[in-house]
Amino acid sequence: MNANVLLIDLGSTNTKLVAVDINRKMIVATAKAFTTVGTDVTIGLENALAALRSQIGDIGRAEMIACSSAAGGLRMVSVGLVPQLSSEAARRAALGAGAKIVGHFSNRLTPAEMEKILGLRPDIILLAGGTDGGNENVIIHNAGLLARACLSAPIVVAGNKCAGDEIARLLKAGGKNFHLVDNVMPEIGRLEVEPCRNAIRNVFIENIVHAKGLDKAKKLVGNIIMATPVAVLNAATILSTGYHGEAGVGDLIVADVGGATTDIYSIAKGAPAGGAVSVRGLPEPFAKRTVEGDLGVRHNIDTLIELCRGHGLEPDDDILAAFRADPGRVPMNEREMRVDTELARMAVETSFERHVGKLETVYGPHGEMLVQTGKDLSQVTKIIGTGGPIIYSSRPGMVLGSILANTGDRSFLKPVRAELYLDEQYIMYAMGLLAQSEPKIALTIMKNGMKQL
Image 1 (cartoon, rainbow, N blue to C red):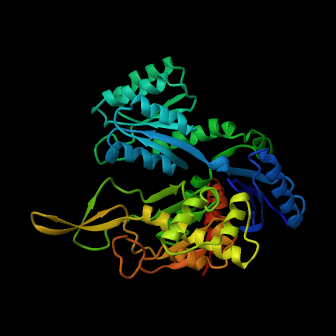
Image 2: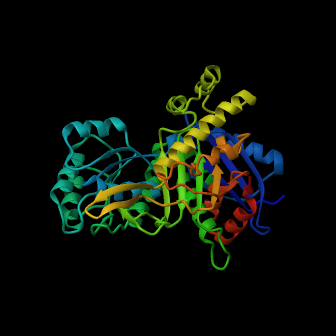
């Protein structure tokens, strides 16, 4: 069978491949193998390629396009001014670029906080703060501390433009690798995150691939063009909105459960569905991603165990020990599958409650008011599950059903009713990569490839 394009994800747990026949607009084969990032990532890649060749033979001169979240993905520390404003804007830019926030700091950094930043071992630092023409002192102070610190992580500066020259002088004098871009919040209440996102993505391609030890993989596949979460976000967006005459499926939610993180994506405006509701906080992005670095079903298994126990569940200790000992382990029997499903369901439910908007009643001079923070996703009618713990679960509907609203709880603005779909062939990341050059084909393949539960 002919494969024109080979789409690759060097993941934190598994290396995955999707072979596509562009002319026939179809998937030829898929394969995966355990990611060997701890030793030599090309070993896992070669194992996956061997598994693919066993299905379709020699792949010939197929074009290879890759993304990666190996070695835990892109670890980012963000530093801002006011937590509710520029700091939150910086956080959103980072998440949309595929990063995982491992530390967040606001206002003037202290020496103790600088020690914490060094201890977090970030791959990249995002420095923001102040609207254009606003406070310059704090971001300049923070730039000075970063300039003098013993750290090699690239720094993306996306704050008050009036402080840009002084910040550049300080960081240059400190020998730092930095990128100066437009302010993520030039005015209060107005976000401009795309320049910052692009800079983070470029830093990932130029610097982080080397830092994660993925250089050898580049020799086999060419450039690793983006972080895996960016690819999934691209796929979800085009599936929702469509492309040049090819209709999308409308507003949707994607839950992506992995060994290291659980990511939630919502493609929807998220405006209040009801009438008399006031919205509080910064404007929400139409295409939104959140990542929970403490809710991976293998690398963060102890956190999920505590959450399960808080809900009256007692996962089998022997099985949990086996999962701890081997993060790449897939369930081997029904008992292991049941525990894995419980962990995945808890990861999805908790992650989605951190992602979705909330509704609360507040009391003011004119009586009761309903106030919304975050996105109202109550009217979203399509939920898609991806990631190994969902795709290979014996009960994926139970995992995804945890996203739906509980009858008695309207504080979380969860979908009231929705169709559940499974990314059965594990293709969403691949279609996000393919959409860079063949968006219409990627859309067609996704629409045909999602399995309704």
